[in-house]
Image (cartoon, rainbow, N blue to C red; front, side, top):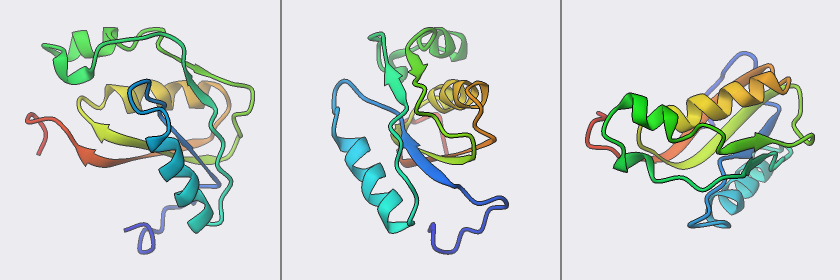
Length: 123
């Protein structure tokens, strides 16, 4: 998939959404993906607050509110275009919030990539 993908501008580095349930799963994959793409892996997103799983939320408002204050961007964040990796996508809000925080930290563009869909609401 990524071999045929030609975004302009192309990602310059890779990061990922951390998980307290599976703390090594996504970072290990993202690190190997970055190496395969010859890009640096920078784990600059921290999960600083526990929250419920997005799929447990009843609606979009609850999904967005469930992520309020959950993530922090460290000073390791790079300024160029970023490939943001997560294991599953439920509501899309995790990518939205993390992308907004990365942009606030100076990242010029964010390309979200999930390994799987996890919501019956999504096609």
